[in-house]
Each structure stands twice: as structure tokens, then as C-alpha cells.
Image (cartoon, rainbow, N blue to C red; front, side, top):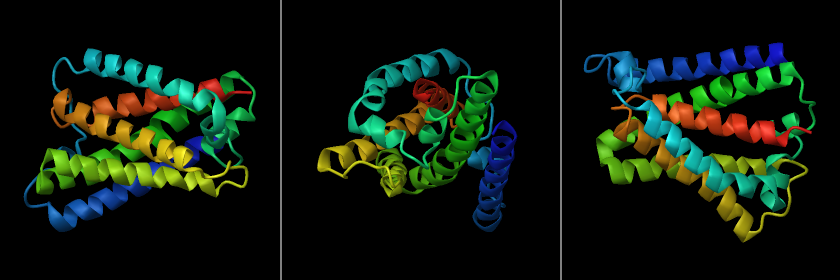
Length: 206
């Protein structure tokens, strides 16, 4: 499982980087260096502590939602990332796999794509309030794919709202942290995303 997830994570990362590089080459090559354009730069001084505190706050608020009730059932349904870990034992290899999936396969690739490629473009064009709201909405919408699992509970209005709303709110906060604490770097969002996912996946272990 670990080896396969390392391969999957690297392939996914390369794909996202290729898409981002193509977009940069077409639209921004003459105006901005690639890493700066994508937010792959050193974060501003003093970013780490407030980013960690924000991560703890987000996890404390959202963790209960994912550990009990229909949202927990959906997050650990067959075919989902959480479901795969829920059916695994708590071995060292499993925890190593969690780190790979949380910080690279989901955390890094999604931060590059959503907060680096999409959010930064939308914020530049539409301003922070509108641009960040649009990317957060898109981030929430993709999580509705969880309902495609054969084990997914009924898509009630309340559950759909949670599945959309929690990731959307987190996506908004991660982009905000990148601008507020990172000086445009995606490092704060990556830390929040990776740590949040790692904690959630560890809690799902059977």
C-alpha cells in the first residue's frame, strides 16, 4: 500500500505541476516567475505559529463532525481515502502511508491546484473577497463526489450542506492564511491541509 501510494502521489503531483506549468507558459511566462506565480516560494517570516494555531482551531471544530454520524459514515465509505484507511490496521507502514497521502497526494497537489493555480488567479482578477469565495466554492463542490460511493448514506440537505460547507470554509481559510501569514506562499495552506488530513485519516483507522 505504501509503495503504491508513493507512486500515485508522485504521478498526481507531476500532473498538477504539468497543468500549472502549461497555464503559466500560456498566460504568465512574460510577467512572473513560475514559482512566484504559483505560490511556491518561501513564506513570510513568522508564518508558522499562527498557521499551526489556525490548524488546531479548525481541527478542533471539524473533527467531531467527521468522527460520528452520517458525515463519518460518508468519509469512511468504500472507495474513499478515509474508507481505505478505516479498513487498515495501525501499522508503521499505514502511518507512513497516511503522511504520504495527507501531505503530498491530497495536501500538496490540491494546494498547488486550488490555492496556487486557481485562487491566486481569481484573487488577482476579482479581488480577494470574490476570488477567494469562488475558489472556496469550487473546492467545496468537488467534495460532493463522496456521494458517488456505493456505501454513501442518503444525500440529505443537511449532509450535502456539511460535505460542501466544511471543505469550502476550510478552503477559504487556507487561501486567507496564505495571504495573511504566508505573504502569497501556499505553505500555510499546505500545513493546514496536510495536518488536518493526517489527523482525520489516523482517527479513521480500524
